[in-house]
Image (tube, rainbow, N blue to C red; front, side, top):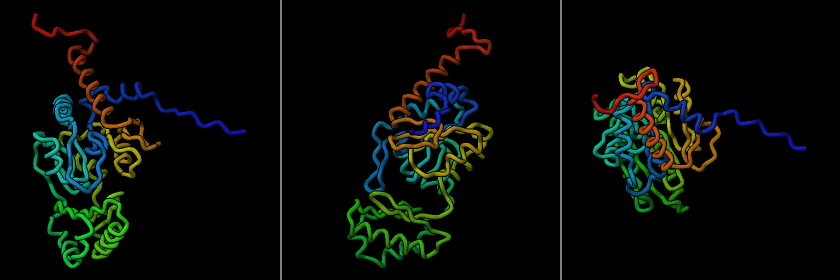
Length: 279
C-alpha cells in the first residue's frame, strides 16, 4: 500500500498574491531580468529584448515609491539598453555592479583591470579564440561554445586554469552553451542585501521573482527579511513560495497589481470610495 503524500499547506495562488500585494509601500520588488521579465537566455550571442515590460516597470516604480529593482548576470550597461529609457535600481554582472535607486550611479565592486591576468591567459592561448566566441563585458569573460564537444572541453579547461590563477579572486560558471570566468564573492543574494540597505528599500518586505530551478541565494535573503520568493519557469521548484509558468504570467501579475492599487488609491482607510473629481 502506498503511503499518502503530505498535503501542500501553502496557500492558493490567489490567496498568496492577495497577501503579497497588500500594500506596495511596505514591499520592495526584485525581478530577475532573463527568465522572469524576459525569456531565459544563454550567454552566447547578443542580448535581445522581446516585449520588455518597460511601461509596467515604470508604473510599478511610481506606485511603490521607487522600490523596484532588476537583477541580472549581464552588465548594467546591457540591462539599461534592454530597458531604455529606464535605468532601474538593481544589479548587473551577477552582483558585481549595484545601483541603489532608479537613475542613480552604478557602483562596481571590482575594477575591470582586476581581470587582466585572465585576459593575458586568454591571449596566450590563441587557438582557443578560434574555437569559442569570447565576450568580454569588463567584469567577466564568457566563452560561448554552443555545446560543441571539442569547444566545450577547451572552454572548461580554460575556465579551470583561469580560476587557478587566484582561487580566492576568480570563479567559473558553466552553462549549457558557455563557460564564464568572473569574480568570486558576489551573487544575486548579496546584491539584494546591499540594495535593501539603501534608503528607498530599507525597512520594506522583499518580494523576489527569480528563475525556477536555479540554485541561488536570493531566496534565503528574501526569507531573512521576512519576504516572499516567486519561481518563474516550467522547471520543478519546491522551494519557492509561489510558482509561475513564465514571463507572461509575471507581466499579468504586475498589471493586476497596478489595477488593484488604482482602485485602492480611490478608497479611504474606512473603505469608502473617494470621488475621482472635485465636487
